[in-house]
Length: 291
Image (tube, rainbow, N blue to C red; front, side):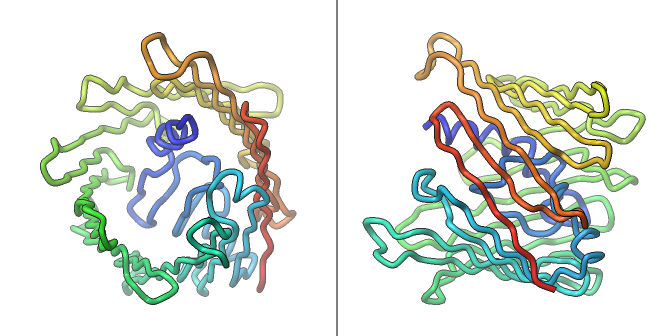
């Protein structure tokens, strides 16, 4: 359950969408356990296109212990955009031979993602996301869940942008629920400065920046968790540390710590990502590329 909490906390800052890409990750996350289409701060579209990458294969060494996917294969087009992702999971009590899901990403003439389809190995479409662009200032996501025997709501996201292409407002609408709204503010350098939520139960997130030696460090407190990112001279994120302190009265006590380290090839592509935490489970995501 602690892993679920950390994943939710991370999603508050990782799964933020920029106008040109879906999702454009504002800050690097743990990587293992998440699927990213399009741009990221770890394997950016520009890096993939410059290196001539056409296919990415990622393998997780601890998928059974972490109960997440074992491998991912991404197909990249000539513009550096992800066209499809095949995600495979290890065998379990329900699948003796393991199983895979298949995601297809469709683009319009301006290289904007317009639709994402998610299917299982039998061709059943369990999820569909439709993107609608309103000029240069608004993007609408409609995610339709089609899983059998699951009463999931259709989720509608509205994302608003300023003239610089920075997201300044996010609003999520779900059936029979109050709309969730958050506002995004930037400093003079164009970097994310803070995130403010309409709900009083969620405190404002403030990003603090500092320089230590040759590294640049960004810190943020998100609910009970403190995030710390370390960037090298090349602007690559090398370390993400997450420390969570559970307050009295919650279902958990004490503190949990996790650390993610990122390693790169000479061309700037990811070589591997390693994760370790209090539960003593260590995991590594290895990446290989085809041109």
